[in-house]
Image (cartoon, rainbow, N blue to C red):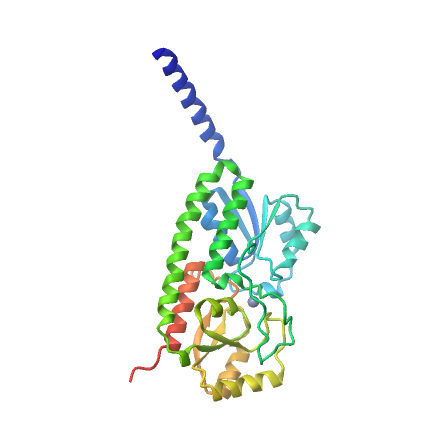
Length: 307
Ligand SMILES: [Zn+2]
């Protein structure tokens, strides 16, 4: 009996080591995604089991992206395609279709609490009434993205389930702490200081989650041309309502904001990262540092001057 048990245990050990040998795939899961913030989420969850190719690189504008033939080839060779959805990066879904991609396509924003586009006074002509795609700017939504990515990676690579679960849980803990930190820090600002100007309407979700009002110079997409009337109205509003600061964005042309600063007398609060990470050696190489950077810039610009 004891002998049989020992043999059974040996057999079990052998089959376990066999399982773990086959569990580490010789080729990791190849994921192609549209933009750098999603790329970071996928790396956080996938760890060494995934290779991630990001089509719109650091500081680049996904709204204005023109795919190259090499992008179609990268997609065709992928196991999974991850898009933001909500109209932000429909081009990657079209590209996957035209490239004959047969793997899984994940819409990472699936299930987030969406926000309708603001019909701000400064524009309102552009895509008004649709859904704002910049959902990652609310950290609670980022947690939804991460859960969706973990689920899709597990389905594509069941042997990695434990790794994906552990990575997603660790990262979700960091996101939860980040969300609490932003709430606590911005919560201390007085009501009259909770208002800034940015280049395009990228911070609607941040505004809703953390109660800061963002006025934007152009619409929800950087492609939209601001009207002269809209800009003049924004400048009047900055003066009348004493908006403390205007911000440049890493993905937008700074000239319009510079002109608004000159004509309104508001100060430049620095650069906010909206739709893309920085380069690896920059100020916001991943989502956590991006949100920390934006929080620090907002606090610097909006904290009341000490008496
Ligand atoms: Zn945008």
